[in-house]
Structures are given as C-alpha cells and as structure tokens.
Length: 186
Image 1 (cartoon, rainbow, N blue to C red):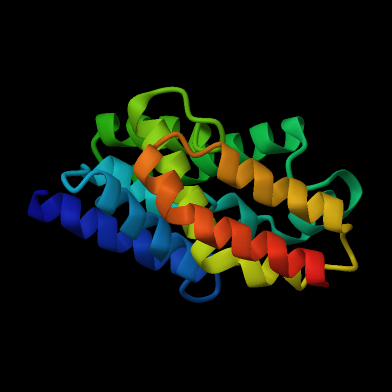
Image 2: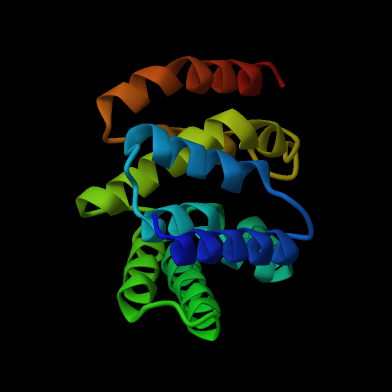
C-alpha cells in the first residue's frame, strides 16, 4: 500500500467513525477478517470493509423503521442499503481526491457486499458475516421481543449460510450455534 493509499484508508476510518458517532467494532472486525482472508488486500477492499455498512448509521432512523416493518433482509431494502452505501463512499472518496479506479472498486464492493458474486465481493461478504457473529449477536438478541425469534433466527441463518469460504464458515460455526442456542433460551 502506498503512502497516499494509507492516508486515504485512515481518512475513511475517521469519516466512518464520525458518521457512526464513534468506533464500530463491526467495521473494525470486518476489516480484520478481510485481512485474514486476503492478507494482501488492496486499499479498495480495505476501505470497502471498513465502510460497507455506512448507510446504516447515516440513515439510522429509516433503517430502524424499515427493520420493524419489513424485517432485516427484505430484498428491496438490501438493494437500497448497498446502493446508498456505495454512493456515500463514492462521494467521500471523490471529495478526497481518490483515484477513479479506487472509487469504482469501493463502490462496486459495497454495492455487492450482501450477496457477493465475484471473488472480492465474496471476501467482503464473508468478512461481514464473520464480524456479525463476533460483534453483533448481543445487539440482535437484545431486540427480542421487539422482533420475533423467527425473524432473528432468519437473520442468523442468512448471515451464516451466505459464507462461501470454507475456513471462515468452519471458524464461525461455533459462534452461530452459540447464538442460536441463546436465542432459543430467551
């Protein structure tokens, strides 16, 4: 990574933390997993890892309302979540004079992080799921009884079943089972 790319990554982290009103363990852990899956991940993949869910803190109120009305994984919302996140980051990167190829790649990765589809989008998707199980389970368990156990279990299943990397899936399976068992006991 060049000195300029490193500065851009640091600016991204500060921007995302500001939008999020503080550091997000999920964002940092997604970046950690990207580096674990692909140690030589380029700056675009690292920026996308840290900022992939930028839409959620930026649109917090509408996200909460949507989740209560339609659920966590409704297709049109997932599309909007990815598209809006990609636009937010493309704008930020343009304002910070990033190279167009970095802007395009970050936007593409964020716009595809929920379902993957190519090698690096799949890496981001798998890292996102791994981070979800490491950092986000308490948040989802705390949402019961506002959300049904079935809806929460559906989210757990979706996040686990979308992992395509066999090593990541094997590593995360105990956390998935633990989360499911905790949900059952609520």
